[in-house]
Length: 125
Image (cartoon, rainbow, N blue to C red; front, side):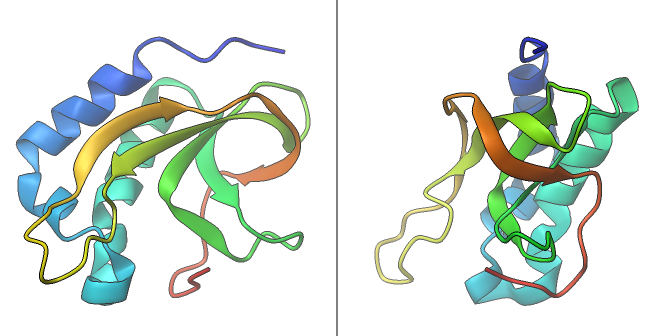
């Protein structure tokens, strides 16, 4: 099992700082397909450094993906991953005035959940 690379949080925060509108509009429930732009950019940038970064599969067939999480494949297969919640307050209520923020919440190492290097557009959990 590989450790989670230490640069991930810095990369994610840099992207958010340079693209605050993408982060603010990252809720698929409110913004639709264009809401993926922030997470897609984070994963694309992380993958430029290490191809083990990708999306967390939410179903066994790996066609539905987590909308606010990145995954890091720490094994030789498509399971055995680190899961990181990167968007806090992801889909705040419209009346609260809250906005999404960067959150680097590392979850326990996962042996069974699947990872994918790319997602299928338009599939929401």
